[in-house]
Length: 135
Image 1 (cartoon, rainbow, N blue to C red):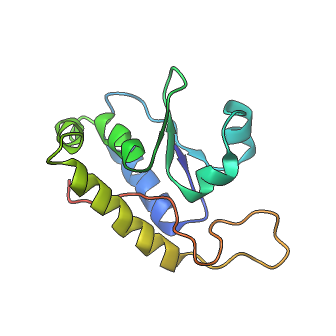
Image 2 (cartoon, one colour; image 1 turned 180 degrees about the vertical axis):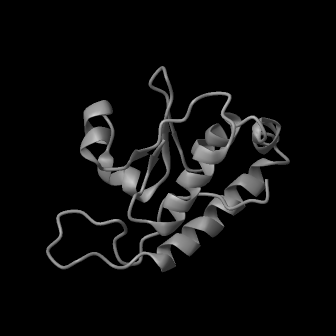
Image 3 (cartoon, rainbow, N blue to C red; image 1 turned 60 degrees about the horizontal axis):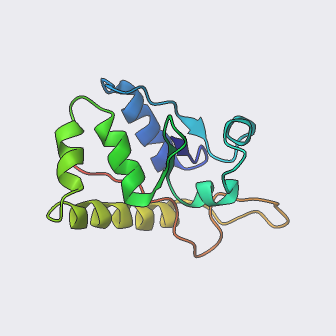
């Protein structure tokens, strides 16, 4: 999973994921980092700073709600919730939670520094959708 290491919400969720019992190991890599660029040269690394991105073992790329569902699926306690979130009944909850987290994140990140080549979130942009569900 690629996460924005400059985002307090993203870092919090990274630590939360690390504390969970994982059925499938999650490797959490800062988005846009040299390590991310080395491992995944084909990705648009600017985009990975703007939306949660998960890369599967076989190279599958998941973004937005699908990425967070994949993370939950990897966790012992939340696998059944992840399955439910992929159903027609659960999908609106996944999308709504992702949008709520993106709104929170877009307010929490500072604007880009003048002259910076890259930044965590351009002014007015919506950041990577992550979820803060009660699951």
